[in-house]
Image (cartoon, rainbow, N blue to C red; front, side, top):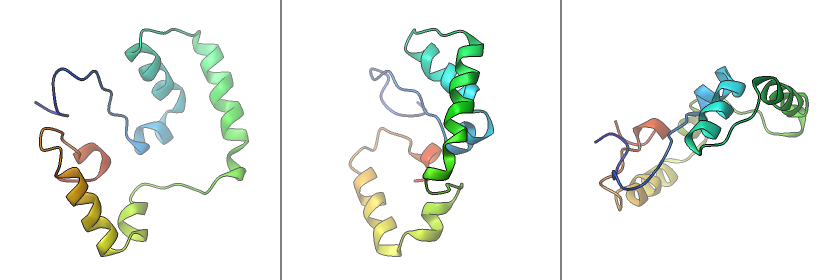
Length: 95
C-alpha cells in the first residue's frame, strides 16, 4: 500500500509537482476534497501568488538534503520511523 494506511484520506503532492504546474496542483487538491473552482479562477489566483513570490525564500527541489545537517536529517528519519505504515518517499524520506 503506497502512502500508508488505507483509512486515511490523503493526497501526496510533491514540491516539484507544485512548481511545475501550480494550477494543476490546486485542481488536484480541490478535486481531492470535492471542491470545484473554474479553471480560469485557479489560473488567476496562481498567477497572483507567483507575482508575490519575491517576498518568500526561493525554494528548490533537494534543498533539505543540502541545507539540513546530518543530525537534523537523522532526526527526521527517526520521527518518520514512528509511522512504518506511511511511505515518506514522496517527500524525500526513505526510498
